Length: 323
Image 1 (cartoon, rainbow, N blue to C red):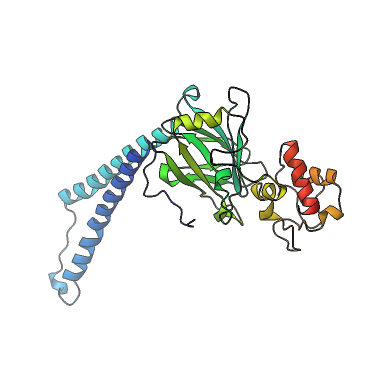
Image 2: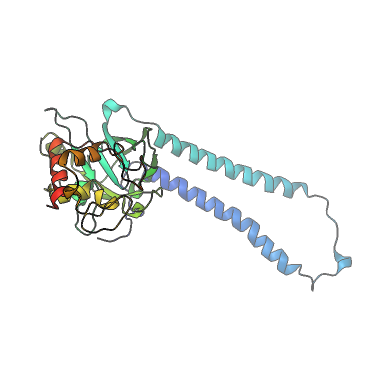
């Protein structure tokens, strides 16, 4: 997979035409204003250079009413055009559709992963997917957000209180919104084309910021409904490993803790930790990391993980045994 962020040349949501028009208008008018100042400046500097004009030929001009009106009216008109397109575009992004006519998905951004939680389906099952994306191993299917085409999607976003600010950026949808610890922010979209579209964190957030990557996979409505109404824990893209090593990677543990070397990353190494502590201590360290912080490190850095009991037990076993 290419390391290039895709989507800048795609038009895949109902926003795109208006957003692209606003950008083009701003760019063209700004260019014209720039040229209207720089071109005359260069011309006059050349025409009236010192070796071509004698001092006695230099006159005094106190004002020029028509010119003053023109250079005042044109910038004011340009600014009003900027305001119109900026205001209408902002209203389009900020005016949320009714939740009753939309799918509301909870998004959590944390160092350095995105997680998605869907509303309960008819059988009461809640799909929870997401996690760290490993480009080398191709785990995007687990890390992606799946939505139906031509449907209003509201993203209700937050980050853990002890995390940092992130930004959910989808170039193909022309949308970006900050994800703030302890606060809830929202953005919405309506994808107009089936396909896969890159998501990137656009707010520098630390060591693995450039790997805080995801995708939005836009599906046909029938395919989405078949998956959403199932109780299958896998994603529409297929089955993915659920062993301890996979959980260790998906939950971002590998970004902060080495497990097979003595290297200290953001947090202490976990090599040989199973010989030092029992499973209860390790489970507490995952669910309540500030309870016992190792010497030399600080509380409030590692978020608390609320994992299903089965996943927690699998992850603890992997930390103990490396298997």
